[in-house]
Image (cartoon, rainbow, N blue to C red; front, side, top):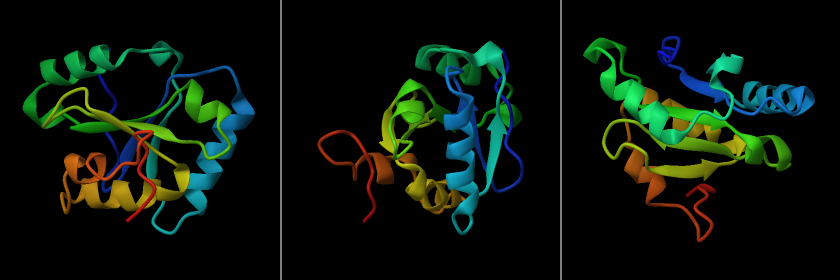
Length: 136
């Protein structure tokens, strides 16, 4: 199950929950509405309920030029919470490390990660008690 590669200067938003098409549409609209909200959306049922470990393993097995280093998951929590908090997953520095990010903060995090201006840990270390990044 090779991981999809993002478009230039975008991040992969990987749908893993297929229970609510309207919530998926609302999430994409929220991301697209933000300034610099650029995403490579992957809506492929083969990723339904994929585990974090499976993603880590797949990225580790990829050729160096095919590694994506991080991914944002649109899972069941994303689809049911009105803030649409994506699950950010580190696939490179600390494979499997995660944090939540409401859709409104996706663009800032994606932009900084895609140009390597900041590291995954910069955001993961700045989460609240629930493990959610809510801005600086």
